[in-house]
Image (cartoon, rainbow, N blue to C red; front, side, top):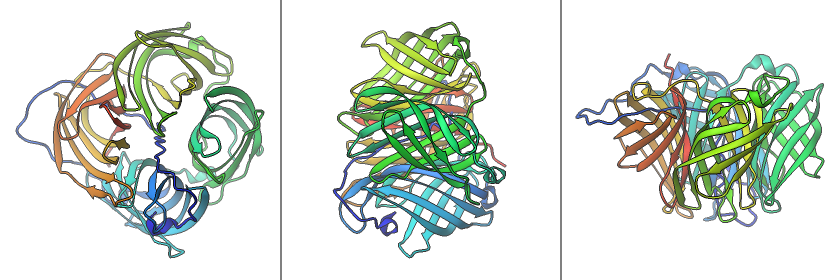
Length: 505
């Protein structure tokens, strides 16, 4: 980014698309307490912890070339880390302001003992460089944010399985994508596509212009290159077409970046584990997280929550927290109902204790995971839900977590990445890299130091957390004791993210 991405400028679009992948889910727990000593970050990570071929994606807002204007962007790519601090064989795809381009890069990286570090991409065409702050979850996954003063953005990366590069992806995948363009506005899509011998067929629900349409899919997918990057083209019976670069994570997971000019979209596709589904396929306790755009603001809604499904069409014990256009909603109770087809498509209704009913469409990846879109004419919001795997208590939230949150408040665009320690007794310690970007001015990238806080947990996995120098209204909904969806539930604030327990070498 910076002089890195000198794409020709059209009309600047001063807005942020907040596309945050719940490609990964995360956790916290409970309690409260005081302490006189703030524990330092810990771990056994080092440069060798990042070793192999990786794919990444992020979205945010950035200056346009050398101008004082800024615009939203999406970005993704692949690279190889040699385990000794060097990056080779990088390819970066970047879309902003109506222009899409790809560039090769090399670079360097550093990894600290707690898994925090930096990636520096140097573009071989001489256009500049890109700096990212990262935090490793383990050797295979990491969170990242922009660490340059001319941009803001957040995302994640995953290690690639190179054995999956030799063939065209095949099987039935559930996909989710979210994007925005000047011509179509915001568009969210969830559905299932079957890949066979390079052809694409399937079914999808597309929310565009405030209208949800159920369409059939056709298209083609090409074999990936030696770096795991390939191309995917999809057409819908509704007349829409989508062209993507895809990045192989494994034979069962693909990351997606839309390459059509003027459209900013990221997505994910995961292979199904079941052939047929019924109401019984949605059974147990689930946590979820979603993000999207409102008619007023790109990135203007984030929601986290949990519910219980009885496997027979009834939803109980629901609770969600949300911020929409700066208005927070806290611990809203809901019940609901659903009907599941054999294709794994569920028509879902959430009935909040106050407010109007929420109509949603789930597409099941497996009986423990689904992608969904919310059918609401005033917003375009989509997300992921995962089955909760344990009971929750203060003692269960214990360890050092990789931490990512991004979005914006009234002062600036905001990105945070780092580590969050929970001691199982209600005490928190945050060690973050913070990027505040205020276009058209340059932003600031700082390390505020160790920040102390506290938390408590409810039996449904809802964590209330307070870090005084950040927010007294942090909310996490736990999937397990290692994963959670997060939300900063403050007025005039649209910031959400994830935490994941680190697994140190």
